Amino acid sequence: PERFEKTLSDLKLSIDRGDIQKSKHLFSQASLLNASSSRLKEIGLRVNILPQVLAALEEGKLLEKQRRLEQTVMTLQEASRLDPEHPLVSEALEIANTKLTQSQFDKAMSLGYQALEKNKLPVARQHFTKAKKLDPLSIEVRTAMTELKESEMRSRLFVLRQESVALEIQENWIGAEKRFSEALKKDKNLLFANRGLARVAPRRALDQRLTGFIEDPEKLKIRMVAQEAGKALAAARQIPRPGPRLKNQINTMATLLEEANAKLPVKIISDGLTNIMLYKIAELGRFNSRELLLRPGSYTATGFRNGYRDIRISFDVSKETGPLEINIKCEEAI
Image (tube, rainbow, N blue to C red; front, side, top):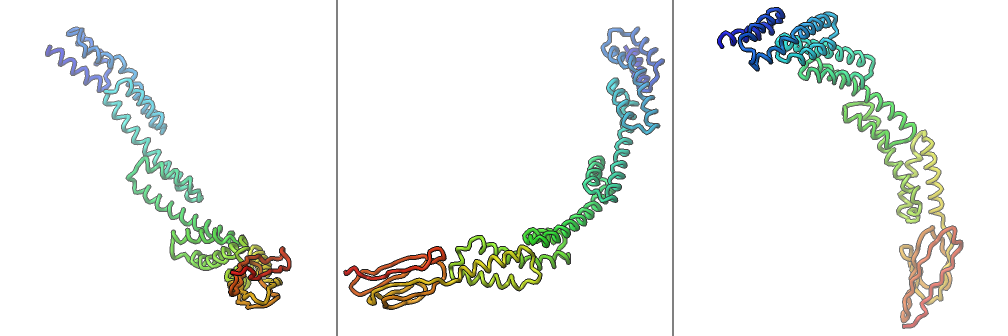
């Protein structure tokens, strides 16, 4: 038994050293000593495939000299599948993997910098990200990523500046304001963004005011709303070199305000006994007939007379209704 164990130990060492002849000789000796050993049968498998393993190792060395590292790793992986316990294979595979990783890392970094120089920033990020996965702790990758982020920021600022100029020409004040605000988030000291924001913010506010009046012209029938619209129109007319959008808004607002402020004749007929008041306009008093000029809109007139039930009449004044005649008389005795 001691002789068998010693032979078995020498056999394992011989296989690990890659000595085919000695391995076969020791295997024969061990077989004579204990042919039924299960351990000997397992080692016998290693002896049988040792020529293939050594051939794969030699092929791997040749491929490595040719810098065909991916094929080297694949060849050594096949050798490892044949004999996972062989130390020469494990060592060679570890070295080949290290070299392959370094080669892939160098290639990714090189391609990344080439893309960076050509301002192909998405491509550069793709390569630098690949390099980071290969070596997460690399200072070189960290430096490259910093350079890339700076280039991305400069590129984005350039795009934002171009877009803001185009949007201002189109009188898209909301879009231009968003671009300037985004640029200032990246660098609050940017001169073009600060000046641009100061320039477009008032225009955006004025544009929204004018749009609100134009989209809902019925509000202009309210005197206070019409006054605010008039102020907005006056401010719009003060802007030098207005664009097509603003010109159209000015013309539309002028027409709407003219219509809203145009006074139309309204004839009120009474009995000379009823005290009449036009709500929010004036107390008209008693009369038989009176003609007023009123702005388009909704009105309410009330009549009072001692001993009679009060009367209340609502009416609309517009160009479509034509001249109105309103009868207000308190005739129902109480």
